[in-house]
Image (cartoon, rainbow, N blue to C red):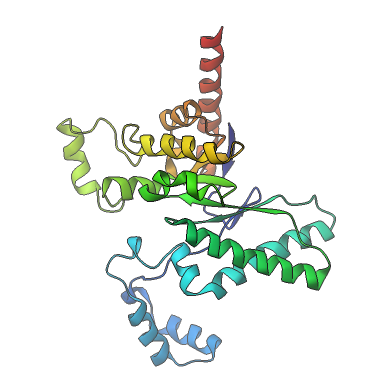
Length: 278
């Protein structure tokens, strides 16, 4: 099992996650910030503020974000894909090692979403090849963050070359709990014995974990060499790492400060398997 860190960065160890959230809270924008962005965009503060209000969502966590944004505004993904692919070429041209890119599409629930966005990325790669006479090698995969994606993993794996389980969102969408708001009642659930562990700290093995196992099994039935891993806060939790190892995942991704504990936990999980085999 491999470890990577800093999973919230744009490019980590050749893994690029494209797409970002829309929605947002209009009250967070200061007048001077709106004026600055409007000026840079060649617009007016009034038009920009009106656009912010139009894009506001009551529940942005389940709203217009991830791959959905790329479906509606394909130019965003095209821009990001071009930046990623050209950056990889620039590194190579400057004497660096060839970058093995893994472009990860978030929040996929339907294979058709991934197909459409993969085709967009392919078109950008072909355009870059025509302009620069070469294009970097890359893989396209997806984050499994929705129960539907886990259940339809066999179909999604026909297009995806790797899965990264986004366990933060998968926990939220499976349990119907907001990570930002659950603190108000999780302490009662813990004290009353409804749950044994905070599911946002340690993977809920029976629920979220079952979806991970189902997706891993179904995905690899379609694509035997499917690369599997997780990214999220669970990637730094020893018990969650042990679960990932036992479930056949290839890597975990975690925040930099969690790397020492994650390395130790991964090694302990591997040694446990070796000891049992002997």
